Image 1 (cartoon, rainbow, N blue to C red):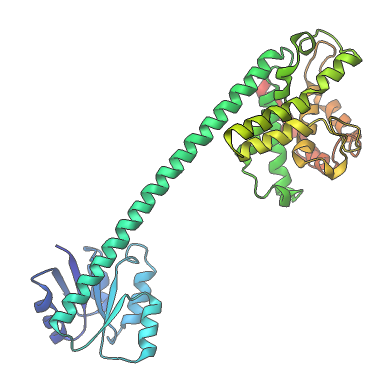
Image 2 (image 1 turned 180 degrees about the vertical axis):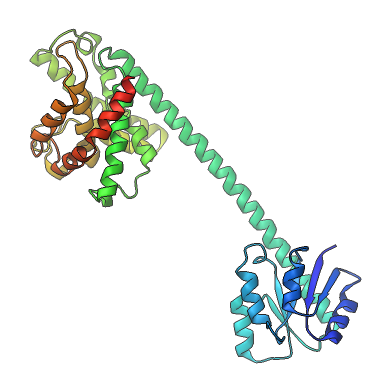
Length: 355
């Protein structure tokens, strides 16, 4: 049985309301707003009938206190009032009352109004429940889709890295450095307006595909135990455009996913140079997408501090110095400044990965 609170300092009104409602509802009669709040610790009513004119705490004050408490804010409230002016009704509705019933009230009016508002409240609660359920299901499906996308990207990245025998761990390391760098850029307000809409997890995940175009490079060149000839290097350089093409095909087949759009920019532009002497498009300055300017630094840093068949690993200090010296030539000067701020953090991440 639904519970109705009737709150009125007039004993006659309480008795009248009880007699009208007790056959259909469990009625709890209360002679003041303070008694109502004490009763709310024991019962949560389905509806409150609240007198406006009461001593100590009037109906408007009681409503404000009700709505301020999340435990009670959703309980529908009908005001009982001997006042019939528009100003008081407007104030009551503004505070959250669902209706006004003028005193003295008749039994049929009381029953019909309560029945209607309980039905409306039940409908609202059911729709709210269904919406919450559907939202939860949608979030779960979205989570599963993101998990699937990330899994596919990791698999593709692993395929590339497993073919390139000399760059083990490169993808994981550059992803770690990228997150450190982007976090610091946000903190320092560098290109923050360009990244504000980025889903950082999607960006970091998509960065794993920056070398996906190496799938098209022959093992003879990819795993050559020595320095590449000019002709071989020209072939190696095609991996940027090839990576862009591979991801464009994936976008056409699977839809315009944000994650793949990020991946395409990383793949296509991570070998461009600030001075315009990079490849494949020879872009310069801020014409190079931010993805490419970011990856250029972490990619080169990892190459410098990693051993290759044709060179020994540089120390962190030497790698940092080389990047600073190439600021404004190879690299975006603003990003180099941020790299310098976090270079020790990046070194710590490198050491952690090695250990």
